[in-house]
Amino acid sequence: MLSGWQTFAFFMVSFLASTIGAIAGIGGGVIIKPAMDAFHVLNVNTISFLSGLTVLSMSGYNVVRSLCSGGGQLRLATVLPLGIGASLGGVGGKRLFELLLDASSNADLVSAIQSGCLIAVTALALLYTWAGETVKTYRVRNKAAVVLIGTLLGVVSSFLGIGGGPVNLMVLSYFFSMGIKEAAQNSLMVIMLSQIASLFTTILTDSVPAFSTPLLILLIIGGIGGGIWGRIINRKLEARRVRSFYRLTVVAIILICAYNMVTYL
Image 1 (cartoon, rainbow, N blue to C red):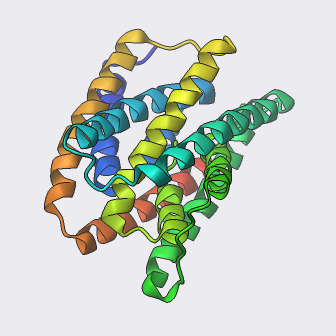
Image 2 (image 1 turned 45 degrees about the vertical axis):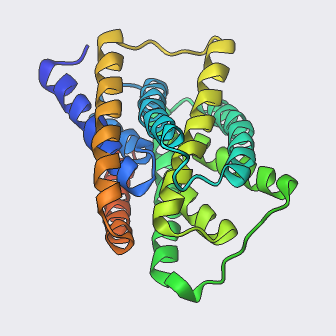
């Protein structure tokens, strides 16, 4: 049972993470998951489930708004097969995580492994942004290749319980030559599709963890509210500002994950 201040803190985490996620296109789960872990009051399954639904509410709002306004910078021919692949990979990544959790008698160890993997992935994404224009990028058009890339992306994102995060922007930039703001918009659609698939898988396999309904409602409100505010900010910022904001966010994520890993070990 969460105290009043813990419930408020979780709401603020969902709102701020969703605002940041909407600005930088990282979804918010990559912040929500380690931030909730740091409180040590909910088990890892519940946190992943609540984080996923919060991210779904935020990304869903942004995608619907983009489609209603004419699509904006969405590359549907690319992002739809990528999202389908991410959804398929998400199911596999979720199953991989469940197998690891079942095989281990120490849930804290599993959380520490997640945190360590997340540090490695986000550090790689940070290094990629610093490399900038020195890295040659591609424009993958083969649909089978796009689905395969999405599948691998989905496995990693789902296993880490982050819904996409910084990995999406790195993949969209490297394989599809997208600028930071365009990648941010398309990343949210990939995240939305993979989260929908994850939710249906959880329901169909009867593996929905115990959770507080009032807390879930607050997190969804925070997710949508953050999505609205973050979208407004993103549209006003120049690309270089979005890139700088993204880098600062990734550094903060690495620090939170390092704290969690040390604590769990």
